[in-house]
Each structure stands twice: as C-alpha cells, then as structure tokens.
Length: 355
Length: 241
Ligand SMILES: Nc1ncnc2c1ncn2[C@@H]1O[C@H](COP(=O)(O)OP(=O)(O)OP(=O)(O)O)[C@@H](O)[C@H]1O
Ligand SMILES: [Mg+2]
Image (cartoon, rainbow over the protein chains, first blue to last red):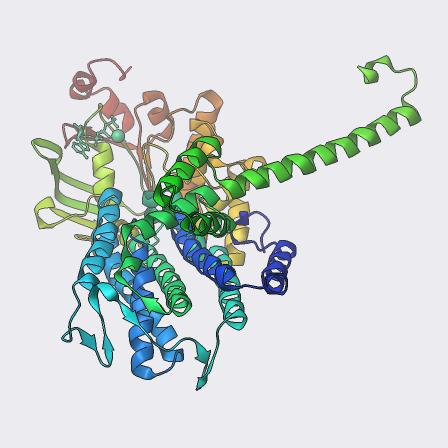
C-alpha cells in the first residue's frame, strides 16, 4: 500500500485483531448475549451510515427505511421459503435495489443536498405509513400477512444454510452477527482503499472537481448509497431475528435520527466512531428504557447537543488525538533524555546548549 | 491546417435577462495557445463552463464541438474524457486531501495504480511541489492551491487545457515560472488562458481573443489587440496599460 495515500483505506491489524478478540471473547464473560447482540446490530447499522455519510458526504435522513425494509424483506421471505438463507440475501438485495433506484433518481437528476435530505426522509415516512395501513387479509405477499400496525410475528429465525431445522439463536447467533460486523468493517476498509473509495473521498471534498477529473460522480454516489442500504438491510434482518417480530416502528423517524446521533457522537468521518457510538448510546438507551422517569429521546437529544458542543469531531477522533498526544509526549521525553545524554557526553563548557 | 479542437457555433448562454455568452463563434486548433481577455463580467468563465459541460448545453445554446465531437447534452465527466483539463477561476481542489492525493486521484483516472504513483511524483517534481506532497491542500495559500490545481490538470496529460486566471495570487518570479510552464504544456496540448494581467498576457506571447459583453470583440496578435482603440475603451484605460 502506498504510504502517501491517506489512512482511510488502511487497516491497523493490531487494533483490529484486539477488537475482534474482545468481541468474540465477550460471551465467555457475560452470561447474557441478548443485549450484546442488539448492540452489535446497531453498530452494523451505524457503520452503514458512517461509511456513506462520513466518506462520500451523503447524509440520509431516512436510513431506517433500509433497515426496516431489510427486516420486512427477511420476515416475508423467510415465511415463504421456510428458512433463512435466501431471505437473508433478499434482505440485502431489496434495500439495495430501492436505494439504487432512489439514488439514481436523486444523483443523476442533480438534486441538491437539501432535497436529498427531504427525499430520504419522505421515503421512510411513506414506508412507515404504508406498513401501518397493511392490516387485513388483502395485504399479503405469498404466505406472509403484512399485519399493519401489529407487524409480522412468528417467522423463521436464522438457520444453518441448507438445514432449516438447525436454528441459530442465543450465543451462536451473537457470533454470527459479530462476524458479520467484522466482515462489513473489513469490506468498508477495502472499499476505502480501492479507487472507488478514493473517488468517494474526492466527491466528499469537492464534487465538481471530481466530475471535472472525468469520474462519473452520480454513478459513484448511487453505488455507495446502494451498498450502504444493503448493509443497513442486513442489520435489519438481524434485528428481525433478534426481536422475532417486525413492526412499522422500524421505519419511524426516531430510528433514523438515532443512527445519525450514533454517527455524530461517535465521530463522523471514521468507521470505528459510528460503531462505538452505537454501542455506547445504544446501551444507554436500553438502560433508560427500563425506567419511565426520563424520556428517552430527550436524553438522546441532550447527548447530541453536549457532544456537538464538547467533542465536535466525535469520540473516536478525540480519543485518537489523546493517544497521539500521549505518544508524542513519550517520544518527546525520550528524545529529550537522549539530548541530555548527548550534552553530557560532548557538550561540556558550551553555555549555549543549556539555554 | 491543423484540426480544430474547440469549435463553437453561435454559442449562447443566458441567465434570466443576462446574456453571459452571446453568439460566439470561436475556433481553437490543435497545439494552439490562446489568451482570452475581457473586463469583469465579459463572460469568459461562463464560456469555459459551457465548453466543459458545467452548464449542460441544449439545442438553444448553439453548437460546441470538442475534438470534432458535438457535446450538446454532455455531462462534464464525459467531455473531460475527450482529453480536456480545466483549472477553474476559484481554485477547485479537494481541501481535505493531501497534495499527493489530489494529483493521484487525477492521474488514476487515466492510469493504473502504479502508473498513477509514478505520474504523481513526476507532476510533483515538475511543479516543485515535492516537499509539500503530504500537506493538506486546505491549509495552503491561494497561490499554492492554484499550482496544485495545475498539477491536477497536468496529471491527466489532456490535449486541451483551459486555465481560468492561473496567475491570480501569483507574483513576480512565480509568474515567469508559470509562463514557462504554460509554454511547456503547450508542447503537447492546446490551451486557452484567461487572464486580466496584461503583463502576463504579453509574456505568453499568444494570439488574443477579447470578450466583451458576451461576444468576441476582436481577435489577433498581442500587439495589435492591446493597442486597439476599442479594446482600450472597453477596459477604460484601467488595465490595458
Ligand atoms: N450562474 C449565473 N447566474 C446568473 N448570472 C450569471 C451566472 N454566472 C455568470 N453570470 C453573469 O454572467 C456574466 C458573465 O460572467 P462571467 O463570470 O462569465 O464573467 P467573467 O468574464 O469570467 O468575469 P471575471 O473576469 O470577473 O471573472 C456576468 O454578468 C455574471 O454576473
Ligand atoms: Mg471569470
């Protein structure tokens, strides 16, 4: 890898292995992986938005649309197929295709950023409204009834591919989700390393310039939008398996807003930040959910405001800065001591050096 | 005679009531160097934007042929792929990326990864940007960013180069260097250079096209054009010293 190109596409393998080890060893310490699983799922969702927003500069106000769509696609397909493998695939394909269609319309149609935000928002609103209105027997896809406000319960959970009766749940399910997250992280890094990813950075920095270099900007934006939607859809499918029911609430604006907050608080423009943000704030959300005294979204909003004021670049970049400063100081101390040694060895009588 | 590389027929661009470019018939031939001058608001930058698809042209805008191809309805990236490089008036660079990355991304469109690394180093050397290669472009001065943008344009080795006020923010000996560089680019490419600085335009020693209120006022050799009465009137003596 070329040292001159920025770190966006570089994997720090030491950190990665340590992180992977922690994730895979955690179930041995915790007796309950249920919470851990959902936090990992939210991390995956945050990663999908962080990749698109942080590196291509595309903010979707309705990212939950793809999360929800993945969940619904999984539920509907798994009921019809009676197992999870094809359904899991469709849970990525359906959101990816919707995103490709909407993305192509927005990006080739040269719609400005503001309208882009509005459109992504409206898409998730429409899905929310539509799914709410699908009560009754007419709304069914194959064997699956959409169920309106009540959603779809009782679909098959994850099974070993080819063996519908061998279901994966509990800690093994956590491992599947964790490995999926690790793989998606590696995929994201690889994308950022590739020329495709470099062009995305160019688009984020200066869309006109990137186009004037001869790159097909709308195509690149549509592609990353679609990839991000597929990742969100995968997270949605996992969430469906985890909660064993899908409801229109998945499409709710609050859901989209939460992901945006995870990304901002964790650190926009990094991959680790959004995932860390999801884990921290997701955990907090679960804790708050156990009480009724304080309103949940109020706290999230407050955290967002505080984060924007106190750590505007996000937690992950802030930690990186601390680390650098710490290492810098270590380094300076060491070079300082070697300087002292040099003075002792050869610099006797030279008054200038001690000043 | 050499083939036209830019050929516009009745090129027109209107913004509401303003006609920024008005019925322009303009021809630039392969290997030619041309200066485009004219007072503020004459339509020079708009003319460049029409040539590069930054305003997508339709049938009402007249005709533009680049390298012999009609580019009506083309997007910028499609026109650029004909071998066109443009330095915009306001430096258009990728501020959050390093000098190296800016130039590399340009080179990468026409070369493989390794070739892009080699080309990037070559361009850095050519422009004396080597020591700055890891600097973030956003942290550099206006003049430095102009040079980086030139590097971005050069890295694709285009056959048509459009430079909109490359000498802005560049002074003294730097502008002499720039003249040398432009002449060197001209060895392999046709160029149109927009500038206000008559000193600079004289140093380039090229044919001159004068724009005024969206139309071509006069075309010809530097000495003839710069001493022309109409041109002096247009500039009201302020710059045409
Ligand atoms: N996008 C736009 N919308 C409306 N009017 C515009 C637009 N772009 C340019 N104009 C107008 O068109 C005219 C030509 O502008 P242009 O920028 O092409 O001039 P110029 O010759 O490049 O001037 P300068 O030397 O100041 O750069 C001006 O009157 C300007 O106000
Ligand atoms: Mg201009």
